[in-house]
Length: 382
Image (cartoon, rainbow, N blue to C red):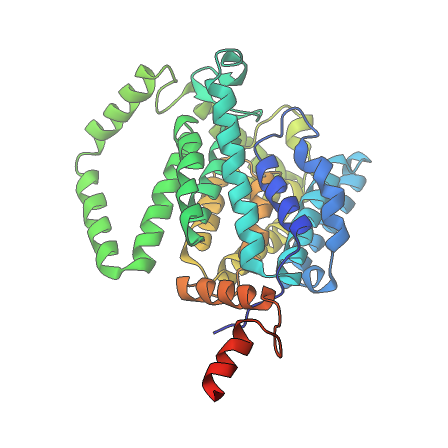
């Protein structure tokens, strides 16, 4: 059993809580996370910088900056990526300097409160339309396809927290559900299967059987989902722009293959093309080496986490990124930091033990006084 680590001071707990809350307030940009970022830098540590996953991300950033400078003469897109990496390193620094569980809990609970504030404002009759994207809930994001995975991460990761705060997961789950993001719904399904498999092999078998049975009725199921989406006011399960998305993938792959070198970070925006795939974008714009480093960093973060809920949250974001461009998702780098920090299993008894140690440490020492200790000694020797 791991000994209790240094308890984070109130300033750190408050900062992490606010940073978690700020993840839901990123439109317009710069958003609230950018204003809190300088405070995170105060806690940078060499230990976090030299973490293998962080070194891989930094190496990828250096490569991206070099490629962008050589290709376009700018480094704007790559510097944003570097900012995301430094944010992850700063969060990891805090969570390794102090008790990682207390720090992660403050961050995750803050995210739940951010989702709650967003929902409260959305429900207000004075501002209801300001936070709609058609029928899809967007909140303070530019795109509901970013709202949904951000909320899903907090909903799943909060299940790793013990005690009453775990129930706060309901709030971001509601945000995830009403964002109506097809990709994130699919990622959540993958996350459920993943969690079932590692939680209980029997449950995994049951899940696979149910999935296989559903495949026998795939056409009516898909038709029902399509009708449900349309009844909610959203476009159908398969939309016209999905064809354009596949065409963009094919064109970018052809351009990258014909050029023989990376197209350069930001190439898709410069040419008005939406990639809608994290891994494809890294491959065509920065090359296979940078893609490999990014995937290795994700794998290290997933493997480092000693919590099924945290691992599942990382899996969901990684899968979601297959069909959505997540290269500049703030929540992806928050997830990497939390996973890298969660290197010890946290049980209910361990949390209770740590709380007991902290309470005893706060008790005043009253030896050789007329207090309770003195009274017990008097009765024992009287």
